[in-house]
Image 1 (spheres, one colour):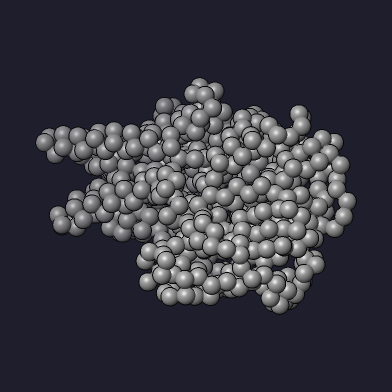
Image 2 (tube, rainbow, N blue to C red; image 1 turned 30 degrees about the vertical axis):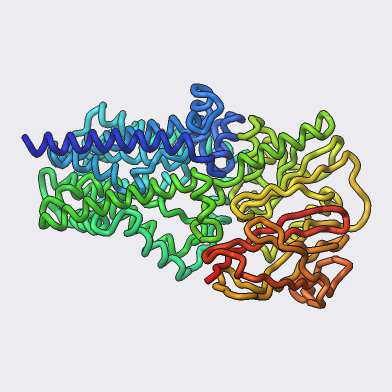
Length: 611
């Protein structure tokens, strides 16, 4: 009894602290780009969309309708689900493994980094995880005794899952495999009440099937065919390596022991043990295998979460059979993992901390710069003629700006990024794909950071074909330029003449993060198609140190054969910097590029270190 009270107290404290931490971070964290698009979908209510079934958009709309136009309000329904999930895990584990194991399973759900942060973001994985746990709970009860109440719970879980994500089909498939592998599961599937629940689950997919039928299967093709290469890639090994870190190593070992136990037969409560182990093990193993054949860039670290939750239900039983020092280490590692996960989101929500991450591969660019961009857009629109509309360079800019401006109807240029994320068909259905022809002034907003640098010039020329030569841009730069936006005032009449693009530049010396001392050389190149550059100003920590010598012969046309800068091949520049005037440590080297058309563009900065 004392052990049960202690386990319950620990759970309640953890639940309170984690829920409070989520609320605080969620109120500060800028919208992730996918969240912004789900908000936009919520402004165009429908039964299904090109990328997802309807539930995520409905929840986002519910949040802002109840709580107002704020990031916390948008995320509130997802935070509520995230807070409910550990309670459901407690109930499931308690039913089959006792009160102590139940409270411990709930505590582990609150500590495991993937589940601890669930609900911080308004994404479909949140209701999908809820659906998976409801189905898991109902399935375990039905294995023990088929009754109407458990069948209704199964139907509810299948309904929520079908309205959450295409990936829930995998959860259903894994559940069937687990049930067919168990004699009790095969008997359960013979009961008509179970088939009524399954029929409800099937009907829940009809809105998504109808959308695909009306749109040439665009959503299904994207999710199954276009998104993935379906060819073996060794990069999938990285997915396997990172998973034990995301669930913490000892907890990972315990979960795999639960999965292995699912392969052994037994009676009594062992039926549920095998069920949890089979569901979690087959699901997780299947996603690990898919990691070698799917798009390595797009497969997400949180995909195995439904399987982990199934395994987590029985993990306390495994842990309680281990030595005390190993159990305690596992709990402390899980807690440390949870703190690190929250720390990442806290860093992403704090501009000063986020700026420190600029230049690293962990820089959270999708969270950065949207509020300064919205301020700049407001200022530009106030200075432009009445009736000026905003034109976004891709769906990310359109959705994020839409949320900031309270406008879910910002038009968007065609962009490969829209295709890559499966949003082109949806934008077209809303009538928001814009080909560049205009009958009123427009404010074009581009995000060069969303484009691979080697493809950036080609993209600029494609935009020229759509909207005409681009006027001098206003640059909105955040975090040393690692998030940059370009704002162009497009007149009603398309300008005539050759394509004029934003400037392009590169620093050859010093290299990124190079350690320097004394006086060192600064070398690079810069050009601006259509008009050329008049001068290149060098900046250190945002302060000008003078102009570089611009015009050195440095032919970049073998790399940029489509470039039309009239000054080619004389586009190189040189300068020098005396580091004795700088304090030891990290500094930032920047460029300010002056076009012959009067444009002034600040380039992305590059770090160097003074010894």
